[in-house]
Length: 114
Length: 110
Image 1 (cartoon, rainbow over the protein chains, first blue to last red):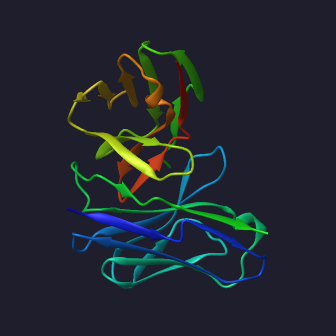
Image 2 (image 1 turned 90 degrees about the vertical axis):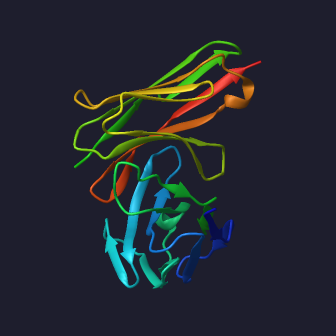
């Protein structure tokens, strides 16, 4: 069966520090991978998605970047964190797009920038 | 751009009452619609997936309907229990991504 791992679960970082969040998927090949952010009391906002190794699409311009160095690994990074980067970050995966495409989410990372 | 709206934003009911959660979306060109459950501080758990050609999907006490032409979906939870307390999110899959509503936070009082 497929599983998704996301870490760390919580993170407190000072303003201006770098960030690296990692997500890995097991039990499937060539998945679509996604990074979402959930601000308090708001819906999920898509940040990045990837359909293959090295292929990254950005939904919104911001202080973050993403990379996919391996088929089942997705990394969210920042060189210098801002206070506004605080939030709940969720990684997700799905199979290739179709009517049966179902998305599965990791347990999330709570990031607090202080 | 797809816009997904969920009404109400919050709902509080006594145990045993049936729950009705509404979701609407603006662009009917979707592959499918998913309902998720989110517990506080946790990730999303997929509850039901309805393909664009389907009218409804059932799992246990949960039933979700889809009217793609009018851009609406409804999640019914029968005989609610305190353990059903959570935030419920609907999301539509189009092109390449899921677009989410802001969710309905449900509290079931014992």
